[in-house]
Image (cartoon, rainbow, N blue to C red):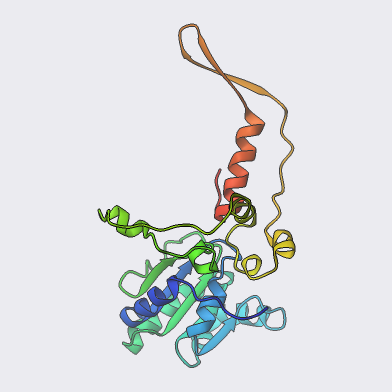
Amino acid sequence: MNSYIRRISDEKLKLLLQAKGAVLIEGPKWCGKTRSAEEVAKSVLYMQDPDTSKANILTAKTKPSLLLDGETPRLLDEWQVAPELWNAVRFAVDKRRANGQFILTGSVIPTRTDDMHTGTGRIARMKMRTMYLFETGDSTGEISLGALFDGERNMEGKSRLSVEQLAFMINRGGWPAAAQERKEKSRSLSPTIIWKPLPMKIFHKRTAPGKILIGSKVCCVLYQGTYQARQGQQAY
């Protein structure tokens, strides 16, 4: 299934493009950054395309403006492969004096160097995460967390999900590709957690005279890893 599932962040991306010259979409791998950007982009540069990657990197080092040519908004996917593109985008935004010129996507942000511009005023940042249950169609969206935090109390809703379904969704995670597949297949599409060998060691923490808390170090690390996988972020 290749159909696009609309994301809550889609409207935010459009608003940011109307307000700034470029938008940097940040987030974990496989959360849908590139796919969402493709929906609004009029032209695309895939920096990790094996057929053109080496040539693009060399071009970025010598004349990066050539890579910015194209209908706008122009998507620069995995731009961090050639960090020179950052300053080139900032300069192009200043020169063109127009909003909605570029979208930058990448799961890894390169270390900032002394000659790397901050992008302030030119490049907006948008954080993207894995899909919410409302986006996957598993939640009715009747209860808004935002409204609750704003003090709204007159809300009610009823979940149609069973305990077994909720357990499955926790295991599946919010990865777009997994959320679109059948139940049996989606489980196999969730990222595999690779554990580093750890000694089965028990650690002790003294909290008060005569009282000792005993916990499993391995258990703590397993929990952190599971949280990391489901949230799509580094947890430790």
